[in-house]
Each structure stands twice: as C-alpha cells, then as structure tokens.
Length: 176
Image 1 (cartoon, rainbow, N blue to C red):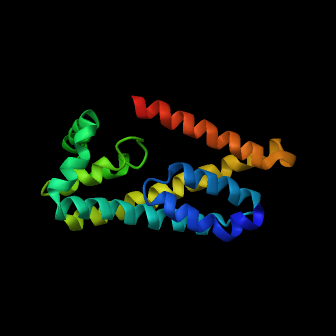
Image 2 (cartoon, rainbow, N blue to C red):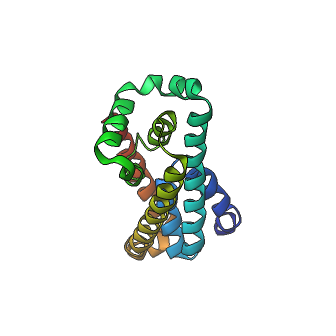
C-alpha cells in the first residue's frame, strides 16, 4: 500500500486538486507526516493544480459565456451567493472561495463571465492558492501527528476515519 501511495500519490493529488483539492491536500498532509509523501511536494502539487483548475474555469467562462451560464443554471442560489460575495468583498473573494465548499468552482466561473480583469484574477489567484496550500497542507501535517500517534499500528484506519469525517462535513456544507 505504501509503495502505491509513493508511486501514484502525487498524481492522484494533482488530479483531485484540479477541481478543488481540500480533502486531497488534507490526506496528503497526513500521509506526509506518516512518511509516505513529502509535505513540501504535496503543497506544491496541490497548489499548482488548484491554481490551474481555477484559471481553467475563469478562462472557460471568459471565452464561452453561454456554456458557463448553462453550467451554472442548476446552482441558482449558490451563483447568487457568489455574486453577492463578489460585490461585497471584491477581489478578496478569490481568497474566501478556496475554503467554502460548494462555491469554490462557481466563483472563477462567475468572475470569468463579468468584465473582471484577467491579470487581476491571475494575481489574486496566485496569492490565494499559495496561502490556501500552505495553510491546509501544514495544518493537516500537524494534525497528522495527533491522528497517527494515537493509533500507530492502525494509521490507515485513522486516515480512513479522517477522510470519512471530511466527506461527511463536505456533504453537510453542500446542503447549506
């Protein structure tokens, strides 16, 4: 199992982080503490992938507004929330959206539809992604010590419990 994680862990983290990556980076942080991955590489991989994913969504909406609007139709309340957050917080909404499940993919789409500056989005997206990756990566690495030290013999069971808890929390926040 450890060889599989070492061989494919970063690739899986990159693929998962392209669409969001919070849970993936948390798992990578815990696995880094366990010695299966490197925390610095995990933070870098998740950050680069998350940045590219947001840029892709922004560019998709900028180049094909009708397709983006069709994609967002079924998320009416969340799109309205995204627009309210954009009005209230301006460019700093790029920082907030990294941590709010459910609107993480909608903010770049909504900003791409508007006349928001592409250069400004790139700048704030770089800063927000770097901050997000470092905070979540380091916090999960630190939490890994508490999780894995309490059950050294069952580290993958403890990791599974963490994944289940995060999935339950993300499901609850999705409904809000």
